Image (cartoon, rainbow, N blue to C red; front, side, top):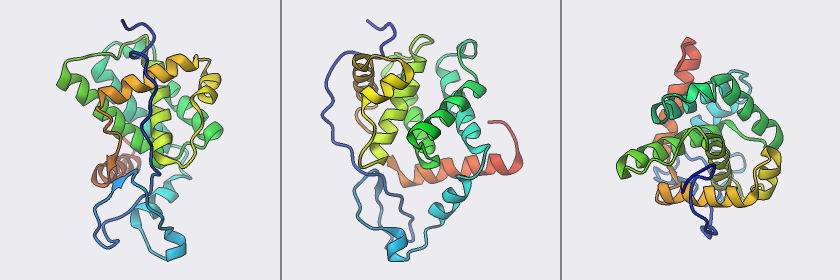
Length: 211
C-alpha cells in the first residue's frame, strides 16, 4: 500500500559508478554516463564541447529554473492537479537548496530530468502508477539522491539527506528502492540523451520561452 512512501522496503545493494562526461570526439567511444572512467579531461588536455558549455551554464542564475520547469512539465503529465502542491518557483528553490547544500550541479540536474522521464515512461509502460500528490515531494528527493549517487564517487548518505528534508531514512530507503525497481534499475543515462536535453534547455534559455 502506498501512502507517503513510494514503494516497499528493501535494502539497495546496487553499486553506483562515477559519472564522467565524454563527447563523441574522444576516440569515438560510446560510453554511458555513469560508467567508470579514470580519464581527467584537464590533465589529458582534451577539449570537450559539452563540458565547456555546461561549465559556462553553471554561472547562469536562470538555469536551475529551466531545469525546474522541465521537471514540472514531466510531473504534470503524471499528476494533472499537481499545480496545487508544487510550482516552478518551489521546485527552483528546491534545486537551489540542493546546489547550495550538497553542490548539485547542472549536469546532475539534466541527469535528473532524464531519470524522471524514464520513470514516467515506465509508469505508462507497466500500467503501475505510484506517483501521486502525497508522495511527489519524496520522489523528488529520491530523484536527487539517485542522481547524485550515479554522478559521484562519494555521495551524501540517505540519512543526511533525510535530515535536511525531515524525512525518515527508512522512508527514503524504501522509496529509493521503489524508484529503482520502477525504472528496472536502468539508472545510466546515455550520452545522446544527455546532449539532447542540454541542447533543449540551452535553446530555451537563449530564446527566453517557457517549457
